[in-house]
Length: 463
Image (cartoon, rainbow, N blue to C red; front, side, top):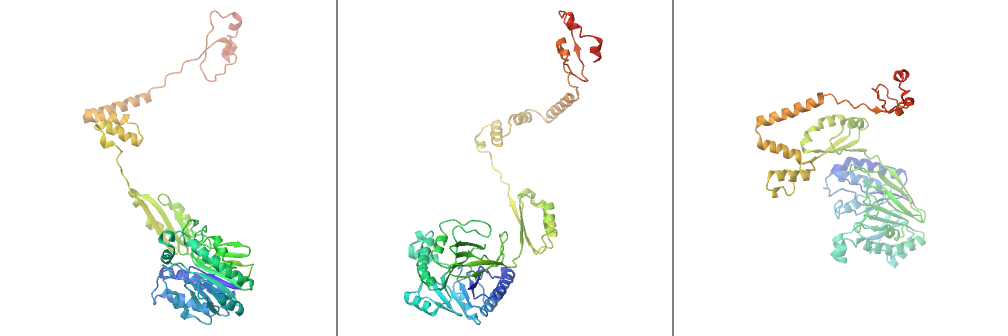
């Protein structure tokens, strides 16, 4: 069975062109691949949309087009993106095949082009017998976004923040017992949910680890689904265990700067004990993110601008408040005139001035200077000397002293260095002496005997 799995479409006025271009490509590709069913695992919209909004109209047309070729299952996503009740409108837009909205915890089987849902969170024994008897093509275990307010009522406000994973794990284990019977009867099982797996990676490369996430990998595999299709995280990733897969397709397009990896949808081949999923990339926009710790380097920007045509560019820098006017924004805009979009973000660092701790407790100016020098890690002596000069002398006296110091410094520079003393050597040292271009004085002691003095001849002096 081929299942086209889309997620995080985020249709909205600001995302319309990106979302519709990518989802349109994905929907057409799913039809060409002869997918048997389409699954949208949450966040089809980015926020509440008015009925007359162009973005809602475009999304409705895409969903309606999909239903002309295959059944469609839509899962309730994050409440802030898909207000409760919004997805119910899409059930009215069905074409040849049914559009089914899963906005409660349930199991639903697909037979032909029709969905049949459980009365409760899982199929009862009687319902399970009917599902097996009818020979369902696939059974979906649907776990939409959980209302944490209702969870707080059920488990208590204290445990609501960290107890969600345990509650969902209990449900998945219960559904797993049903799914094992379905798999034994030769019926494929698929889980669909919207949330965060503990340990997954976001589109910005951040590992999600904590106690407030919805799922653990162990809990998801306990559901005994051949395929578990997830939404919410915008980076494609998957995990495999004994021929069963858990996977995110990621967002359909690139909606934020700095997102890693390809964007696309998953084409699943669901078989009992041997399930595979392939990421098919969509024509998502290309983004370029350039960050500077200080002012932007115009030479580097000029080289990067050569390959930025038709790309979405974001440039960020930080600069001190005094130098904020040194950045030529117009020149940067001219460099990236060929980019599809240019976004500049300047972080201005305010000048922060603070008094030296304890300086107000000192009584004299000298002690205040010394206290400041301690905090600034500078020598206090020269500062005190100049302060005393300012305090005791008038302007003419200070100027005369400065000039005198300058003249003394010039005099020291002009005087030649003292001639180094000429080394005194005995005749015993002369044999090994090598001093090219040097003045040598050889002194023979009166007590020296004649064999030593015999070295002092004309040949020696010539050498």
